[in-house]
Length: 387
Image (cartoon, rainbow, N blue to C red; front, side, top):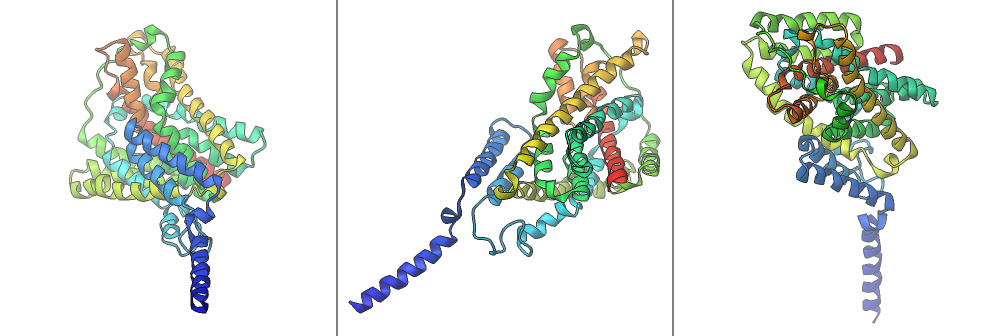
């Protein structure tokens, strides 16, 4: 009898200890909300094909980051010494984004921009979303550093948003990163209504002349000149712009094909996996589900709307000064944001809806790649003034 009682007490104590370490015992309703959001992201990626390369790692990262556990077990992303915390250093210290930019440079053909340099103005105008949102954030009472973090979402460039936030206010990294990548993935839903709203049927059917052929020498010279022109103006953008133009030189030089392929394929894939997974895991419910997070998502959405609208409207304004034979189709204005090549594909798809023979993809790639440069320059400006 005594032996049975002793055994029961031993079993009861150990089971209680075991239970206290399970996720069931530590689960809060906030965890369940974030787990549902993570499942929703994965569903969007798989079933709706919304940027699966981004949303699958981020969505699954949300699941990893929101499994409940007892603090002090060194498994959480915010617990020093944990594996997730070590991987998160790439986000927190800002060294994943430059590696992503290296890959972007290695896989991007700037021919469309070089063939028609005035398209760079469209990419520049789209960055008004960043500075417009920054001024709006200041007006409603945000401190300058936080306002800069939220404003950069308007560039529709996840790595740039992460890099900028890691320097200005790392506490906002999770919310800003998820917001930026969410709006990038939702471009097919957000941009088309704006494009139709600000353009007429006649404007949507404007046919642009085929772009001239760009020489190999121009392609080689561009990353060298581009680096010096942009970084002499905003040296603080050097980590992003330097890697972007270096990757492009690897692509265009003709003698570093192996390096360009590695940068644009294997390396970019690895960094994208780590970046997406750790960004998703950083949405730990107790730190992520706050009024400030909702506020960031709202202002980020406004910034994205301003950027997309500014791109389209800038083309309409530009057309007032161009002869009829050189007019630009305003549908490519949305591509001024940095989401390559998603935004350019949207320009092409909407153009084909109104004229099945009007292919705008190559024209839209001009402002699209200009937007990549423009968002990095805008980030450099914010860092120079606020960093």
